Image (cartoon, rainbow, N blue to C red; front, side, top):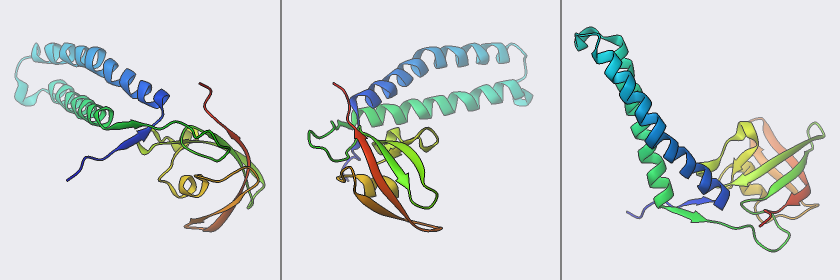
Length: 159
């Protein structure tokens, strides 16, 4: 089975690397200290502080493994030189249902954070926007019905 490829911008890869470095150093050090303190309380079989620290340690180690895998299989995608939407672009759209302007940053799946306007190129809106140009109208199928967006602006990564 082939390894999954994680498309991301150079800035996105740097963010993931910074998170990994922080977890490997500060995160592991904090957990080691919590475990040390919890062990000092004695009997580990009924020690909720120890159980909590071990659980937190497992979460940190899982995230470290996830980040290492993503970074090992990362493919840097640069914005295309043409004027169409691609990963790394900030795209301003007008949503037809309420005439609201929205700004999305098109990123790879591992970087997506919809709450902060970062949408994956694999998401329904992202798929609809990839390859489109200013002035294009795209239709996205949503649970509430089709939503039309008009592309108002496409801002490419500045190198």
